[in-house]
Image (tube, rainbow, N blue to C red):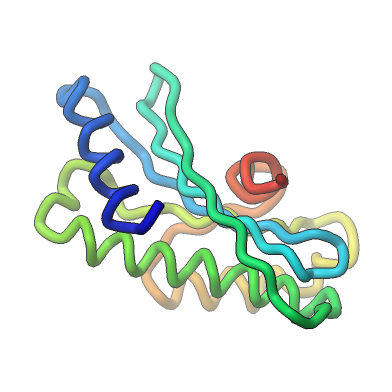
Length: 142
């Protein structure tokens, strides 16, 4: 699906129960070599379930861990920016999209937390890391 099609589906889903509260979460994960990237857009109807959409993108070269994490974060950020622009004036229906990144306090990615989180926050988006980053570490883990 294209982004405008996803936005249409999001609108239809939110119009089913317009009085509900909604959160939109975006996360990206990649395989261990960093060639296949999956970005998920999750719309959570708070207290009542949700829906998700995902897109796989294959890169031609393998990535080392640091570059792969940055690529995941940037892909999620670009989708969040495009989704915010696409929703436009309707953005009052949902809060600003939240970005989930697949990094955490345990493991080799802990050294990257400040820089990746700082970059996303600097662009005006809320961000979560493991274990709260389910959109990246679970939904996009395809």
